[in-house]
Length: 142
Figure 1: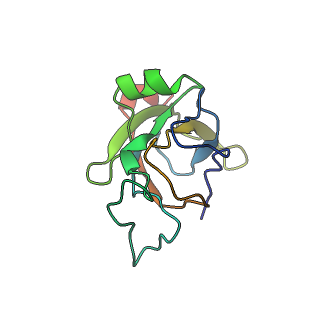
Figure 2: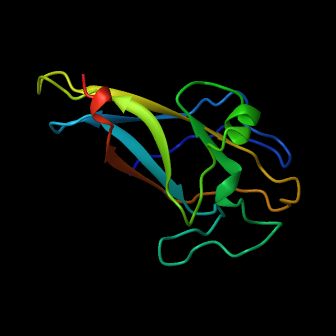
């Protein structure tokens, strides 16, 4: 498990620019991109008990955005770099194929979130995002 540590935000606020990050490493014999999808966030989230559809106590998955740089939330959102709970989105990280086991190539994903202004329940919100490696285009291998 890996936590995306968003800063404390009030309803109506967003992470701007994108700042928490996650890193993936190419440990196989191919270059990789990344598929991303995730669940809504709430105080009581578990894999067995997803968040309720509540405007006052749930942050929908599509309020999370991502990118390859610390761009603005608005740019990531307007570029379609939005997390979905139903359709994995590909992020072109273009992590090159590692050529030595002692130094693996890596790629960084930057994250942002916007807390809906309708949220009225304060607390620590959690959810689950899934990262899946995808073989990159051959031109990105070296």
